[in-house]
Amino acid sequence: MDFDLTDEQEQLRDAVRALGRRYGHRYFVAKAKAGEHTTELWEEAGRLGYLGVNIPTEYGGGGGGITELAIVCEELAAAGCPLLLLVVSPAIAGTVIAKHGTADQRERLLPGLADGSLRVVFAITEPEAGSNFHRLGTVARRDGDDWLLSGRKCFISGVDEAQYVLVVARTEDTTTGKLKPALFLVPTDAAGLTCSRLDMEIVSPENQFLLYLDDVRLPADALVGESLEAGLPALFAGLNPERITVAAMSAGTGRYAIERAAEYAATRRVWGGRSIGSHQGVSQPLAHAAIQVELARLMTYKAATRYDAGRDQEAGVSANMAKYAAGEAAALAVDTAVQVHGGAGMTTEYGVATLLGAVRAGRIAPVSREMILNFVAQHVLGQEKSY
Image (cartoon, rainbow, N blue to C red):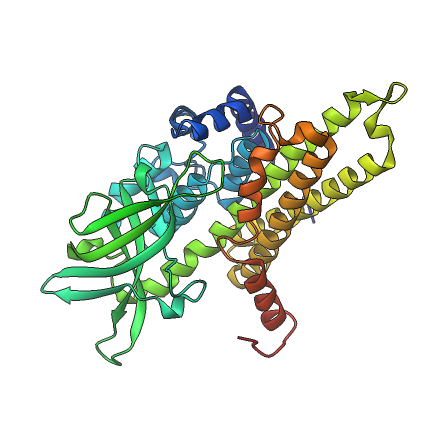
């Protein structure tokens, strides 16, 4: 059992850390509050090869795995720049297309995903279905050689920055008559596709949208994979990388918050000149949060290692546990950091309260903590399904 990164992974971590710190949380917040995107950071990360570390080398990527992409997600977040598009574009879309896309789809899309010039976002969540993808209402039906997609999606990240939306819809199995999932690449400028921005209480340069698909006409090659049989495997191929990279981003955010709070506690002096960190009422909650973040990091890289080794079933359990642990740890770390700073913690200047909304959302999305507990109870502990 080896808890150390390889030399190449350590070099990647150091390089991404240096990039993230050159931009930092002030840049991230300024972009968010101005209603702008972190375009400069994204483009530089793409030029340096960090956005495509998990894309096969024949398509311009780094040839690594989700472990390498988790390192990128964590280190940018630890610098105060948690980029959600890393999760939806290279992690979900990149993995799905690399593993299940047609040869043409791989040739067309993976080079752009690798260098960051192409962004593909992911649309599964619906207002009525919530976490239950078996109840998705978005339907794709044949019209000659074309497909027509109709339905609604909600909480879809980064649509205004993307060229494609990877839409999960349901198609009719001509043999059984039952509906089964399929994935479609929908251009964001497609006729019949409209979007409405959701106002969120989250400081983020990446926006959330409602999507409306009104008989969006797509050519046959918009279907991901060679046939409808690729739909379910393709969908699940993207979910574990999503959970792992979200966990990495949450762990990085927790590290950032703890670092800021530890520095403040060590240098802030009151009541006779002692640092506030010398008081157990300050130092112990901070130490507790640091332990929780480190435990979450261990589970995150355990999940990534299992995924990259092709141990899908085990990776699914670990990925869900990692997402749960990191979401809880990040929320605790940011809340503790605010408390350590006192009133200063609620100001923009100190850069911790700006993360409160994001880490709270991390306990809900992309899968809620309650659904993860259901999953563990059923699939790990052998309990009867409760829902």
